[in-house]
Image 1 (cartoon, protein in one colour):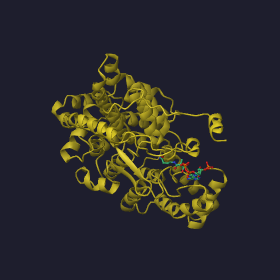
Image 2 (cartoon, helix red, strand yellow):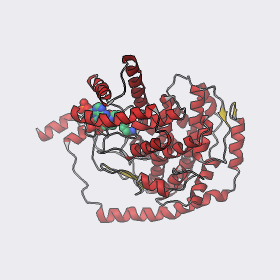
Image 3 (cartoon, protein in one colour):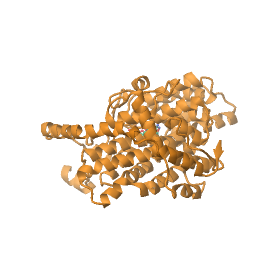
Image 4 (tube, helix red, strand yellow):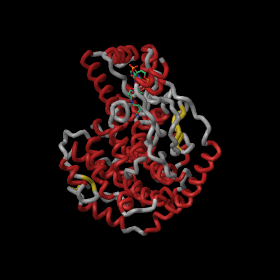
Length: 458
Ligand code: AMX
């Protein structure tokens, strides 16, 4: 049932708030034990290898977006150009096999992934459940955030609303408060952990409010702490289909982290390095995710596919390898990118694409849009190869996600990047916790002028 405003929701969350404190001790205890171990490990690595060379930087790399420059430590995930992402050493198929699932479900619970990203250890079902409880306990929003979201013009892009709402949540930062109170730097990580968990917990309601207010009548379902993170998120968004719950679990898992150099991860890490609290840091990351070459590509892909469908209907042509090929060339000849294809690091099909394709084959094999996505997959890599500019002609995560969301009735593609953002929080905030625990310094690479480069090498 949908109820206006959030009074009922707040009381539902507040009663979850009163849940026994024992439910959060496992994760915090585990991290408390791990922090000194990892601090010692960092010290040992620096003592043994501190003067080893990771690589040289060429002038092309300095002009070329620092592509391939190895100069950052990011422990939550690692991207291999051929194989794709591993989260704490585990590939996506391994996560699908090893992470706890919802009763009767096949897809991993993102709560289990949060445990894995934070601790580096695969959780038991009990431990994943504990994370679900932690999320419910911390989900209540401060009073000023909901009215602020409701006051935004519907024409404001959902990512602008999302980033602004995260900034508004910053009034709750326990790290900022502790810093103001003069906390010792060895204690930073404890307050950062509070913010990291609070923020992950609050994002679904923030995101759902944006969705309900921008595209619907503003009513939002009561918060239901008897459900897992993804199912409760779906109810607040207004969806009540258990297959969509499964998709949401998979979606939130696979978009969470993609090592440290991508724009949203790097921006969060960079801003956090100034000891800006997790709210300020994550909001910065979301402003980067909102760019069309990064997270906004999921919105662009669906526009491209729907435009293809419309154009073909107007021209009265069937979707076929030949017609999709011609349409792709039209895009390239107009000086535009084919959204959802290419990657700065990957050189093969993104395994995040592959697992979404498998989900579609299982749950929506007859969808017309899925058939278009499949035809595009057959043709675009060849066209991009023939075009000859793209380093990687294969599809990335964004080439598939929109069609799955459309299938379950989430048709508003300008919203899609917000879902990416809710997921991305899990990766970048887990790493931000470790940045604080390991005492990572303020980030400050050296820049050079063109004049300096010419003088050195001419
Ligand atoms: N369509 C057309 N041209 C493409 C292309 C694509 N899908 N991918 C790359 N190119 C072009 C680049 O624009 C560049 O052209 P230029 O020399 O005229 O500037 C040239 O090929 C070389 O680029 P690259 O080295 O292969 O890629 P990159 O590392 O500079 O950029 C990326 C990577 C993802 C921005 C790029 O492939 C792209 O724009 N793809 C489409 C947008 C997209 O899907 N983004 C989402 C990525 C995943 C994510 O972050 N969510």
